[in-house]
Length: 256
Image (cartoon, rainbow, N blue to C red; front, side):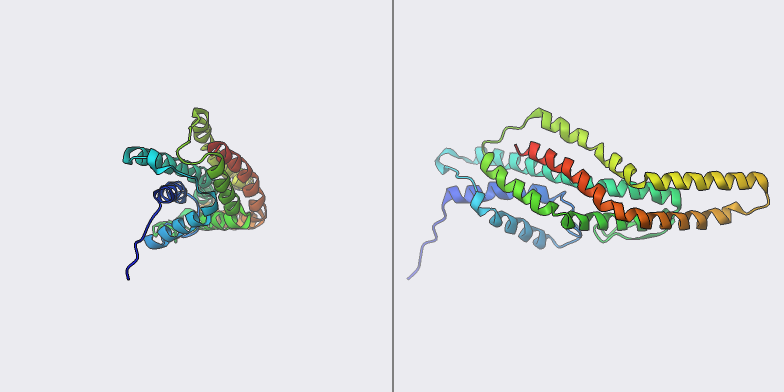
């Protein structure tokens, strides 16, 4: 004897709206290797996170919803998720900006490798910084905090009742400057040391013009950069955690 499969339209609409909010965030959230992973794995991750938030799904009255209203809600939820993911990605972008600055000044840009996240040819230091930022994202518990904020936002501001504050959009744009601030904070001591090396080599060139400074400068700058960078790695978690507080506050403002 066959059975009829009955699907509650209100529950289905709630699932689609929450999925749109979560999937939009996963586009930019800095998960290591997510961009290089297969598409089905990313879909399963988004759906799994949506089911985890089942207890916070909003109640949707299907009699008050038509296809136009549903599509408008889904676009709004996807845009909200994109804003949250973009704000979170500012953390890793700051590390990459700092790595790019050091790579250019210290000579690491001459050595390239395959970026595991995109499959493109990238600088060695840039790849290391990107992977380190992705690991710190989990080590500091930022993933759990963002998931908790998502769960709270589904209760305080359920889909279909979202009102975007223009000041939040302005704050998100202004937060883009945090990328350069974080990058400079990470590598400013190293840039100062490299400047001192350049001045020392320039003085040596004035004292003895026969020195082959072109051959000496490259290994000296690499050695100095590696030595100081090994020490600066210890402060990377502190900088990441301090910056994440500002990002979490911005995400709360977006979802509130």
